[in-house]
Length: 265
Image 1 (cartoon, rainbow, N blue to C red):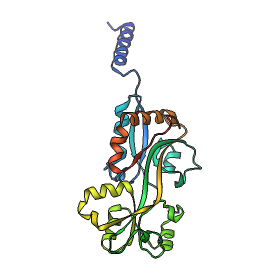
Image 2 (image 1 turned 90 degrees about the vertical axis):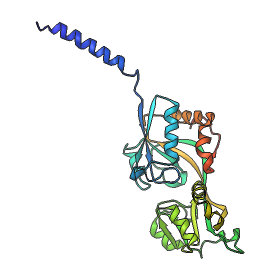
Image 3 (image 1 turned 90 degrees about the horizontal axis):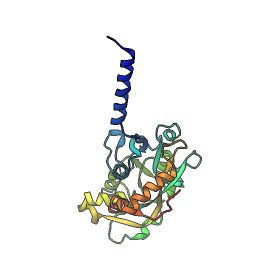
Image 4 (image 1 turned 180 degrees about the vertical axis):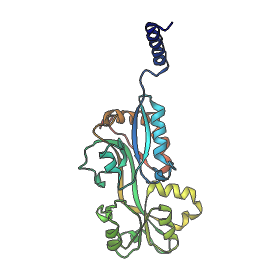
């Protein structure tokens, strides 16, 4: 015979059993914007989420269970809009010169430094003075990047007209333009050049690398105001990875300096 009381008791037991199978607290999802910024992230729009950022995300997820960090593809021009609209919770590997000062955010110093350097073809008699004056040089640069020599103006038309720059979406292409005589100087990150020379060891002797830096990237993470994780909590997670040697393991092979920073932003 059907009994509402018996059915209610059964549902209660089922609910208790389901709760027993569930974790005490589910990890909160934290979405990190992934832009094409090699070697940090490579072609996230095409799904090839390789590079240093995926390694960092894996390390963050291994280190704790309160948060689940995931990558969300975005682009260099779109990333700040995605942050403001809540599509992503965090923009990462950002620099104060790149136009985010007026966006509502919490800043976390990641304690990581990279640099933008000049690369030319090695020729007899050519030395470091070659990089002093860029006005008479043909430049190969990455489209959308902010360069100090251009006062951080990333407008493609400005770059092409003011600096005789060819803009591409490939550091490899820019370096090959130098080796083939189609450009005089390419600008690349120190980390990218380190990776390129490992992959193309036979080309190392062809390049003259500048002692001059265009800029030093001191990397920050930007969290939107209502992000699931606070700046202090994310900073503490990074401190844990620094103390354990995980950050050094990930970034040192690419000549990215791992610095000591405060535990809170």
